[in-house]
Length: 273
Image 1 (cartoon, rainbow, N blue to C red):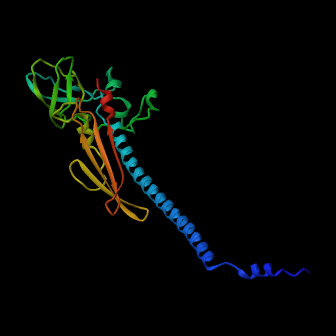
Image 2 (image 1 turned 135 degrees about the vertical axis):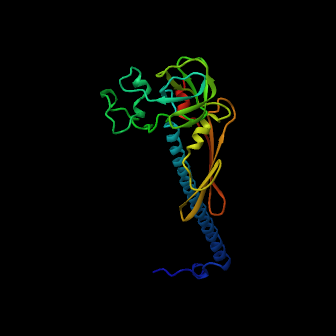
Image 3 (image 1 turned 180 degrees about the horizontal axis):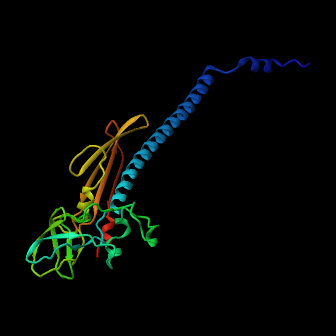
């Protein structure tokens, strides 16, 4: 076997210098710190993304509930009744239901107004919105501020009060209207009443606590307690049918996690004659 030369023995016994070892440790440390920092940043982004997703889902859940309310508003062009007694030179009228044997019953009482336990004609048995607006009294579907037509009159009569089967109007009915004359609800879009937006706002499901136009609620997820506020604003431009909703979700440190501003238009607005 060949013995190593003196020069080779010198190289083999030399090893790494202290500077080389320190430089290697420094390089490894820099890579380790950078890698750990990347892991921490990735974990932070993942946590924030999950917080944002949970907050957005919370907002979406509430907004979907409000859309259901907006869709199911029982004020439609089908809010139709008849006078229970003649009316002349008075600002009060008494209403009665249109009966099944009357020719315009199907128009006056569409399936969404029928109770779920009431027998349905064959053509209505599969109607998807049956019972959504089932009526318990003859004035259901009417609200203070509604504009109504009585018979074929060209004028508009605005409701100022409702008591039982009796409706009080802002103006006096001067022409004679016989019993059985049809009464039709028109658009709920008067400025003083706030229009459809005010009607929808009065029916908003609560988030938890709060009063006036703002409602707040809390929910726990990702090991933290979050709060959501919903502020409803009726937009001023005519015909006053749009409700603006502003959502803000904050964490326990009062940092904003998600916020959304959107507008809701009640479905009843599109059904107005």
